Image 1 (tube, helix red, strand yellow):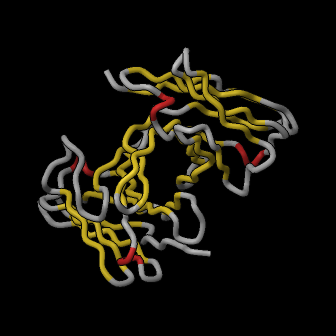
Image 2: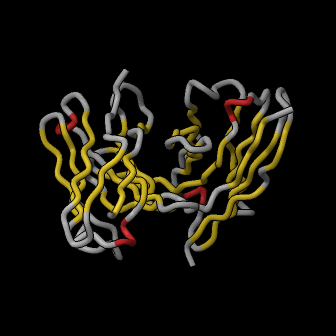
Length: 108
Length: 120
């Protein structure tokens, strides 16, 4: 079955750039979506269709997808960006959505 | 305001049943694909079930045959009936609105979730 692999954790200093990866076989041929989940809160969509942002999401959040890796990039990281981030796609090996295991972003 | 609000979670014994609800406002449940996604304590997200606008329903293998998704159109409410519950079903259950794009689907609106605990 298809697996989406994320690093368990990423750490970055405020003002720096965080890159969170999501690996999968030929993931570049699929559309990847990203969610942010702050402690005690519901997930929220931050990037869809690889690189589009919902209204209200800052331009600091961007996405790219090619080959076997999709990447969520957060520029000029702020303390408020500290959260778990999940990648998701649909229809990899079944007609169902699939989530990655999640990455905890720590802002040092 | 466009939102969904879950309710109905609680403590249930293994083998028991529970129905959780998701009341929507600001949009029509029956015009959309609607899903349930769960998150076990300290774990990641797991898709559970979807109901299409046309009424077709699909389930994750882990709940197939035990859970049933449905909706009440006049109440604009989504439900998840959970039977034969197991301890591994313990999780926060989120209601989510699906959005269909060129590449598949994603979840553009989430509720705050309702906690279901299966324990004796």
